[in-house]
Image 1 (tube, rainbow, N blue to C red):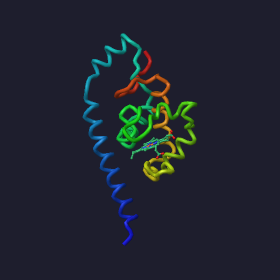
Image 2 (image 1 turned 45 degrees about the horizontal axis):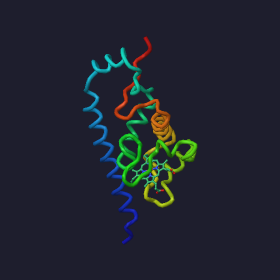
Image 3 (image 1 turned 90 degrees about the vertical axis):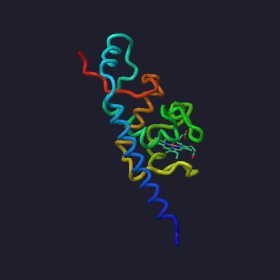
Image 4 (image 1 turned 90 degrees about the horizontal axis):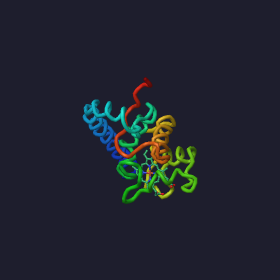
Length: 149
Ligand code: HEC
């Protein structure tokens, strides 16, 4: 019996499990500290404040990418630093980012994320990585920017 289909199923099931775990963890973390946020707002520039799409990108990044590319996208034991990858020197453009996430890498060390992630979600993940790469977003857990006062 071929094992290919079985493997794919297990991999999807795992991904779903990770997604559920990840979102549960986010829900718990979400309960913390609005007062700290208010304090930060009035002092130093807030390098954890992001727009809604970037926030979504961070969430999906944590669920699908962080285990290999690191919690803050700076790379892991086996996977490259994405903050460097998307610079001019790193050579990954918004388009090639999309393609590699859809299809996986040639080596297949990273499998494609079809059909779990569509273009819109991949673009949000890219937006998160871009904010980190450009130094506009600090490492750690971002939060949605408060509306301008
Ligand atoms: C199972 C581990 C793993 C996961 C999960 C993973 N990656 Fe990767 N990724 C890799 C490895 C390993 C490479 C580089 C080696 C290779 O070419 O296969 C890579 C390469 C890449 C590259 C190309 C980098 C370059 O310089 O060419 C991009 C972009 C990328 N990953 C984005 C992502 C995104 C976005 C996610 C989440 C949706 C993700 N990866 C999830 C392991 C992973």
